[in-house]
Image 1 (cartoon, rainbow, N blue to C red):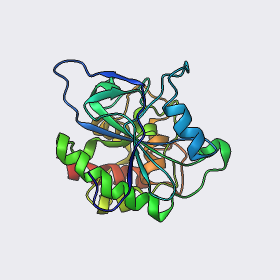
Image 2 (cartoon, one colour):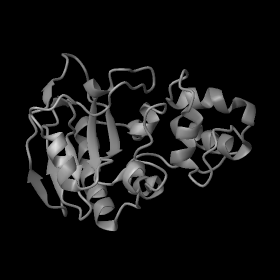
Image 3 (cartoon, rainbow, N blue to C red):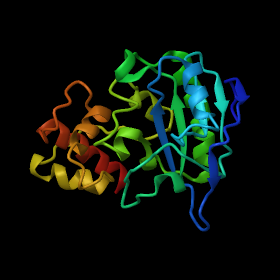
Image 4 (tube, one colour):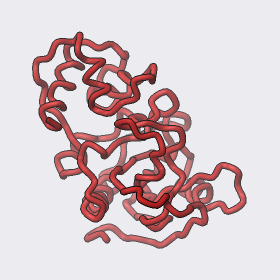
Length: 227
């Protein structure tokens, strides 16, 4: 499964069969948004809670990987979501939770050990399920009006340099075209905060939801990668 990270089987009862005929073709990254790793594990493996929350993996700050749900089972991590016309994201995705207190409890950078473990784990998942780089997304990408994780401190560029996800080089692009390119890349056309979600991931220095020339140039760069 992984070449360097420690992996602990910590089974969660919170999963179900995937629908017949659905292909796994997405990888969704989250932060836990809870005070401690123990709190997160207890919630993700709670058989009695009403939240119906789980993920396939959890990676703690030290880089220990907890395997919670078998990849062939449907975990409950995405909620109401959208990507490239699909809405039942849990049906078709693998979910990874990264232990981080999140914006509510003192958001912090993701430690090197945690990022190394993710970079070790994710390529194998992508290979097993033929997940395209375009479909490596954050929770905020697929649910921008509800979620901000894994957030502006997450190093998407580092991840892409390891072959997990995409990172664009700017290409001069008319800012008028930015909303259309945003939809074309995969974001929900009806989400009010989709542009901010894009900036949170690709231009975290300024998250204002304005389709300015810099944002447009990054979208133009992404188009070069997917065309």
